[in-house]
Length: 253
Image 1 (cartoon, one colour):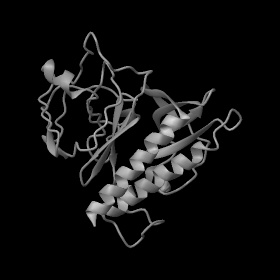
Image 2 (cartoon, helix red, strand yellow):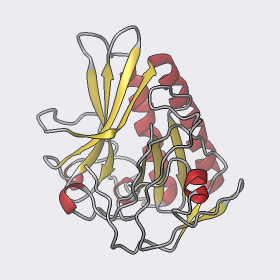
Image 3 (cartoon, one colour):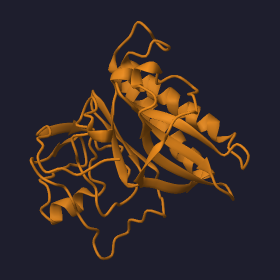
């Protein structure tokens, strides 16, 4: 889905909050890139990925990365190709998931971590969603809409079975495509989560608060963005994420 590039100039700084950072995975090759699917430039933060293991990047001199335990700033240099390899005794594993989702955000973006991939979610379409709080386009409204999406995701998990074995959760909304999470039931209460996109549905044709989307589309999965997790663990993770959003929404008021 994505490609690494040498010649781009991303923003020099990104304001982020690390207070609820939950590390989840490791990918031996994680790229920060300026283009979305098929070379299209998504709205927002270059459509790129943040590194799953910043300390490894710093140790190898691949990027100038400084982060604090409290609110801090993530510094990146450009142009540069961000590629790193795991340490010899890495505790990260793509098939052993401790915590599924990481969320770090400023006033414009959520950074959603799915397995070893980090997805920069532009909140523009969340802010203008007319189905909820139609007279409001604030960051607080965007967080409320996103929380609603997580609650719907958790509710839909209950219906997963061998016969009804998958559904999609639209996460990213862009003018020419949407990014989705595919949630598939395997067996013994285990799930497989895939991140990918489709150009068959434009971001402006549906709303983030929509509970259902048409299923007749081509889902192009990102091969690096697959994780296996139990239904119970995912429900626990989503509950924690809802609590996180409730706290952030309360702090916005």
